[in-house]
Amino acid sequence: MIALLQRVLSASVTIDEQEVAKIEKGILLFLGITHSDTQDDIEWLVKKIISLRIFPDEEGKMNKDIKEVNGEMLVVSQFTLHASTKKGNRPSFIESAHPEMAQFFYQLFIEKLQIELGKSVSSGKFGADMKVELINDGPVTIILDSKNKR
Image 1 (cartoon, rainbow, N blue to C red):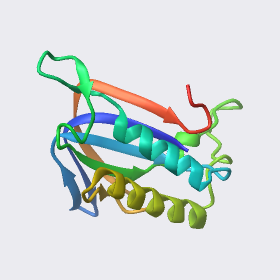
Image 2 (image 1 turned 90 degrees about the vertical axis):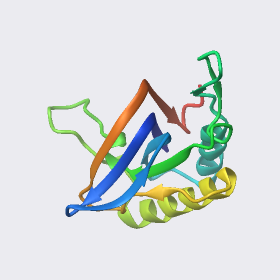
Image 3 (image 1 turned 180 degrees about the horizontal axis):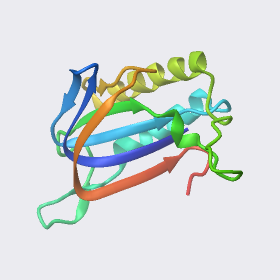
Image 4 (image 1 turned 120 degrees about the horizontal axis):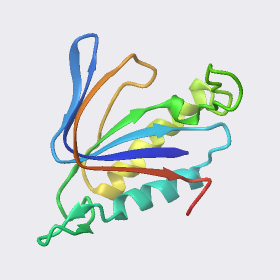
């Protein structure tokens, strides 16, 4: 499971010209699910995301987590995070989970994130053609991979 996090001042998702989700200060999270992911990957990733100290303290140092700044979260399914570009010029998505499994894990991930965060989490619509807008803060962009816990 791969999560690409962006610290944002605001972010939103639009589908068919309708805004379906919007947050202010917090994290925009793109989530890529692979066929070998398990609930352990979800547990690890959720705990890591909630405890990441990527928000500035009073001195401007990245020292606070999302709970400490009362930040919001927006999760967007992003199967292309598992793209392989080793051969040719057309990406292969063979590592991405099948849609049924991916949708189940996507929903489970959001539920676990809401429990750990202690409030609701906004999300895009799984499988939809989404337009994502954001104002990246910093910019701060971090990639987490549950299979490579460095």
